[in-house]
Image (cartoon, rainbow over all chains, first blue to last red; front, top):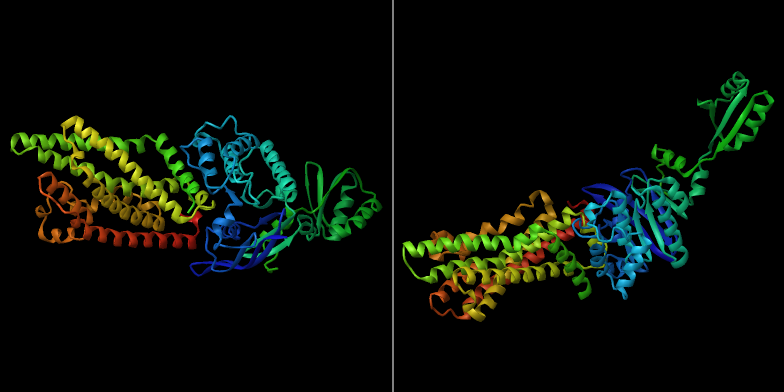
Length: 307
Length: 261
């Protein structure tokens, strides 16, 4: 069942189109990543989904209700956490979560807050002023605030930015766990490609206000044909150089390892030719194309075609 | 409108009040300063030039009643600024709260804090000068209500302007109401003003209240009907100010709430 439907959404700022008619939907329990270079329109899209930015045209339906007409109803079950926002600095973490909790119709408030405190490991920060927290701790409190209503749909803008690796992993596991247990749907933007690859079922790639990619991270990565073959050559380096030149292949050598860029489909033949040319190596590894490679290709101008 | 949401927003500002020395000093320090300075000044005039204690009460009454429009306006505009400084406006509006609930909370907090400051100043005036503002009795209710409404008008106007143009014009939050203060005739009679300024006071609801207060202190009776015109004026201004802040909010929604700073 679709919990989010976006149709022909556009946004123009002072005659400059920023979002140029995007459409997508999202199933309940899905984790959807939105990626794109700076200025692609990610935050603008999130703002329109939340009803804090009026679209120029198009429609957003969440839980079958139209945004912003049913904004208040929708936001009872939806939340948002972003690096763009802060909580009141002078208030303690506890106070910030208390007042926020009153914005939602929560039945057992104190039990809910205790749960949030333990999930987000806030015990030691509970009575500290928000201003005294580190960036990572503040991100954690922001995430806790966004979870105070146990949302059905959660929008996260750079959710694990400035968290230390251990906490970031913990949070990622927490998101997966929430999805498994409560079918929570999540939309996230991130510059951490590994995070998007491991968390998201599907990724939308935005560029210049258009969706230029919409698929699983694996399928998107597969669209990149090049792989990297890493070899530590022990015999006949000259033979390898000759072979690379004849095949017009790029390579670079760093720390004794020669990294060769070769199309994935040609890899078996190339390995056969290496053996045939009596080139010996002591180490071999293959880097398959990742979402990051796909993203870099798009960011560098690989595709401007809307899906 | 949902009461639990209004309580939630109110809690946010009440917690802040508890933590902020500057906000506490706004509520208590300035009334003390005004009362000490003006109380002593009026005492000096009474003792050197002559006159009776009515002059002291009229001046102190002006100071104490001025708290209503001042706090009413201040709470709305400074609380909005707090949310802009803290980049918290987005947090508020990605929750289910309605714009009208947020505004209602700010208005109610203005009343609450006005009453706290007013009671404190009234008590202090009595302790320092034996000037009892509460002898004015129930008349304080309609006067206070009208002055708070007047303060709300300014609060909404300033908040609307700050929302639209950002914190670079935040100084309005502290100064704007003092631009109209001379026409409110807080400490002096309207007749003291130049003729053109007297004409302006006809359109300033607060001036009617301060005139009525002075007349009552001097022993004259001011009928309640004298407040009908200023009340109508104030309600018109309030409706216009509410419309203006609503338009400002819709305007920033077109720009994006994240962009407001």
